[in-house]
Length: 290
Length: 275
Image (tube, rainbow over all chains, first blue to last red; front, top):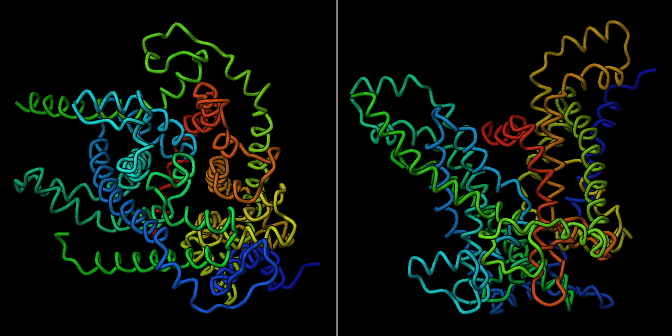
């Protein structure tokens, strides 16, 4: 009647095993292989070319500018998002009138479709849109064709949108971290006459370090892969080409150079891995004062 | 003294919160406003003319732009992928939680590893694979690769490990078969975790653009985000219709969020804090 234990175990895990093999292990390995070939999807056959793709990438001005833009995007948004998210979490941590409402309102953009957010901001950023009106109000210059059709502002406009969208999500993670801080610590500090700032520096910040590390690491992994907003808003034009957009454009449009695009994807993978490891190491080593 | 101090505190708090609220809420409110604006209205004056409200944008979307098909695709694909995840993630999670052996320990390591792999690496190979395997531009490409997710296995496994195995043993003593125990005894106990999983999977899928976009090309296979991103107005950007479609895409997310806020929040933070 009943199957042996090992057979039951295999049967239960088989959907994952199949998915893992077919849609993760094989593609990741196949992509590594393709990166060393001159494979074009529409051409017949392909040959092993060694490191040629990688050499070509680092001489390709489009890829170098994609790398630069991706780094600007990551290094520009993450400190801002992290600090704002922590600040917002502190603002809505303790009970007060309307707390749940504020929390939800701040969080809502992060569960909205990226395509929808990008479309809304295309409207806000266009010539005569609300962001332009706001900028004029405080005396800032507004590009003649709107913020997205200008080499100098497009990437930064998309970055600002990204911060706006994701800050509520990270606020929520900081809130969960704040809940884990034992309340007695604050009471003891208060009795000893520690100021609010001192309590924040000496209790909250050190205890939130692991949460902050988590926030920074997952946000970097996500931000290095920025694509959807670039596709919807500028199609990589106006100096907004990023690494994943480069992969898409070279591999899945016009020339279908899947080998070259795979190599580019692997360069980004290595960068993300190194970045994550470095962040862990840095956060571990530094003392309690951040 | 204490009273005035805390009142000053409250005033300062709201002085920060209210502008922040305006900043965070305005874009989505503006989307809804434009969605109900008659086409051809000047957008810059939109807020001043609240009286002009119309439903024709939504009507046009279904009748002329065939957005109904995209909506249907999103719903059908979302339901199938969610059902698959509830079932398969539960099965895998149960196996990994209760059958401890070397193979399963390695398999769980693979779950964590895939959880961390940046998905951009598989864009190209998954496209090539789907082309070669005849999945490209079909419902299968929208569904098959996503039927079981590492985050789902991770969440449910943690939940199962918090359930004492006594119940399963009692059922086993009563002579119940293994699969009966798994699906009739344990699965109902996992309802809270499976609800969190279902919400998360459905909306991740509902909002997903990248893979549905690269793995299909037919108009008839577009999901809602793909249809919106590729929607072209006749001449200039057709904001009223775009925002009406966007409102349709956001409405279910908003509704479920308001109804099930606690599950959504716990699903998001559970994975985060335990690591």
